[in-house]
Length: 244
Image (cartoon, rainbow, N blue to C red):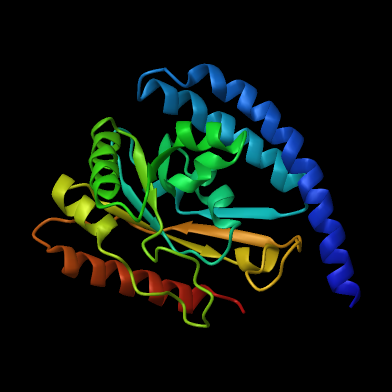
């Protein structure tokens, strides 16, 4: 009972910290809407990083990143992350040390203020439209061609099961094979403790972690072979390093 009450108080505090800082961040983002890439992403990545550094600090969430040494200059990766909480995007995209875009549902454009963030930092897709899915795929190829990382959640939705991972969709691996960009697996821990999928209006300060694993080559691999290799790599790593 006490923890539930505190969790709701923390949630209120998190909103108080998030909304004003979001508005301030958008003021820095809005003028860049028509900037060409990769100039815009190079400018925006430090903006997102500073924003999230402030937000996590003020809400008592400690972030730990490991494996950033696997990034190499002038190489764009397809970065794939596990997905267990709504806290994953604020941790993952700003946690990547170089310019990055993610993929997001087009419905996010309906949210005032947020739509500026998603228009500038994401490839938008209407999952119900085959034409939109094809167009978003072409845009992701363009992102990689311009030297910008693509961050994708191959499970497609949050994993609310007790299993380490849900089954992966093909998209990220098809993208990597066809562009011959290496896959960088990234394993996220403990974000579901901060924003549990089973609770509404609840926030609990915890330590969260994001581990970047060594890149996996796409050379001479089919989409299915690459997907299976990445899945097993991430599943085994999560199982070995999860402290729950």
